[in-house]
Image 1: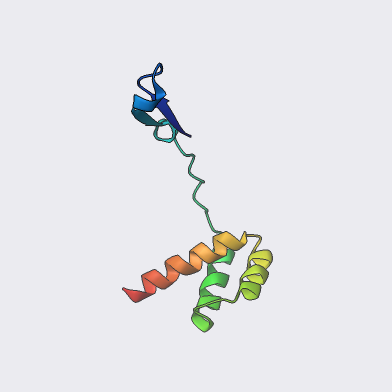
Image 2: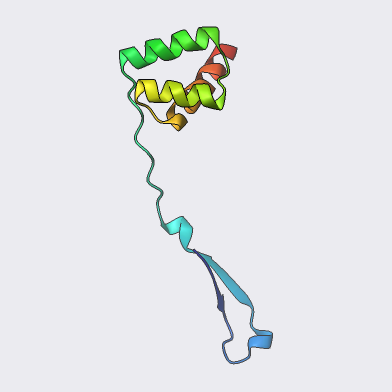
Length: 86
């Protein structure tokens, strides 16, 4: 949360704002890393061989079939494309 405090509370016209950032004191919780099953990985790899980019509909269907979220499939594909470049 961003807050502004004034150093001279009696005379607001001459007060200089001091901005504090409470966000840096709060630690974000990272989401746990996904441990894909062998079946999920084989299916993702096989699908990737035939289709380097998935449409939104294909991605949703693949995620449902593998019991993953749309975001997990999207992230896996992004990472896999990056690995295939190098």
